[in-house]
Image (tube, rainbow, N blue to C red):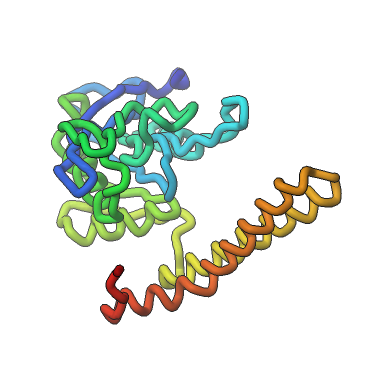
Length: 251
């Protein structure tokens, strides 16, 4: 439930027809509780980071308990200060994702009717297109719920890159807010992330072995460590091949 000084309005808007499909994007418009048309207020669109995040970027425990929802906190704090905030479920957050509450159906292989997500066809530019669609939806009044005086785009993690690319394509973005974005090239970022993940898996394997876990469990963690380390060293080379157009053809 919303705090007493803000109100939540559930909204749905149609995405553009991109590589992974034209789908409904579900979200929440967070408003000051005393807001009423025809008054105008500043507006902001929140864009989540990497992974199949819901509109609040909520994280859940193994039994479904909510651990954190940072974008919910940000949206409420902004609305308490007089900003209309639109946040929406990422296209990759589908009805298959446990606990998230996302509604997008996933297409069956070989069957892609309108309105379902072709998960294997998701590309980065789909997220940029969705952010632009959300910005246009809020700019146009979010279904008659609000009138905004200015538009801000707020991105977290991968969302920083998404909102920067979205703002580059538009002339109506007054403010750009980047939360924990990357300050290095994509290949360097992915390589660093893989190296840190490998260290984590290696520590998990050592702990499992120390605690007498089944040999299969320990071996699986060792294999995961090796695969992740391979990725850490290969990503830079693969990125260079992509930029130079020298990726070998698949036989």
